[in-house]
Image (cartoon, rainbow, N blue to C red; front, side, top):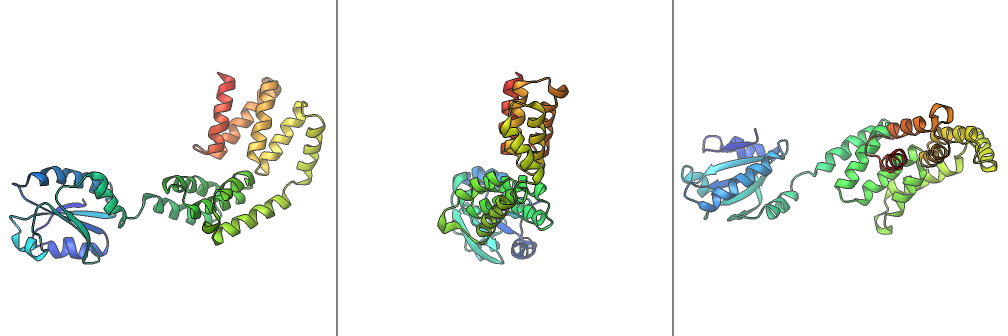
Amino acid sequence: MNIIDVTAENAQQQVIDASFGKLVMVDFWADWCEPCKSLMPLLEKIAAEYPDNLVLAKINADDQQMLASQFGVRSLPTVMLIKDGQPVDGFTGAQPEAQIREMLDKYLPKAWEATLGQARALLDEASYSEALPLLRQALEESNQMPQIASLTALCYAELNRVEEAEALLASVKLAEQDGIYEQAVALVELKKQSAGSPELEKLAAAYEQNPADNETAYAYALQLNAEGQHRQALEILLELFKRDRAFNDGAARKAMTDILATLGKGDPLAVEYQRKLFTLLY
């Protein structure tokens, strides 16, 4: 439990010592203090959201007058943030939730930082498919942080999803282009230069000559997907399904469904083509 009542007997352990591992938010209150009664539930609500990073230490200033004096409390409620044994921030009087959260945001790790850490570990293991959804989540939660955009683009490139990688790289401004960005750009260029196996080139030529041939279109789409060009594969399969739903016992729809499942729930490309397929079906 990260919400505790503090007394003179446990203050050293629960406030000072604890602050070397977590951020400690000390709330000085009293029964007669009306603003305290509205503030405390708000602090408890916020603390409950950060069980691993934040401790709410509640000190009754009437019962623990020595502690209140030691911390220099002059009015109630008083809230202090303690980090590494020292006060780093705080306020007096009841404050709105948004202002309290803004203060805490300066000292608490962001939720996306843990997600990004997990993604980086997977990238180190070359587990790109598993890392990608975590990177997309961190990118969204960080409000499109450029460094995460570059890392996500790098992951897309590793998966041969060059179009998505290029779109992300285009969103990174010149001043925000770091080493990861340059690495992603270089990888995209390499992928583009090496794109297209002999089999893919053969099928591409056949498809270009006769795009209405169902067998060719189907084989071309499967090869595109195998080489990471998922969008083009899905588009060809979608057109094939529009043209002939019964082709090879519904093979186009099944292939699309398999590709979407492989991309994973929440993948923007999967969401886009799930919607298109749903529109055709219903």
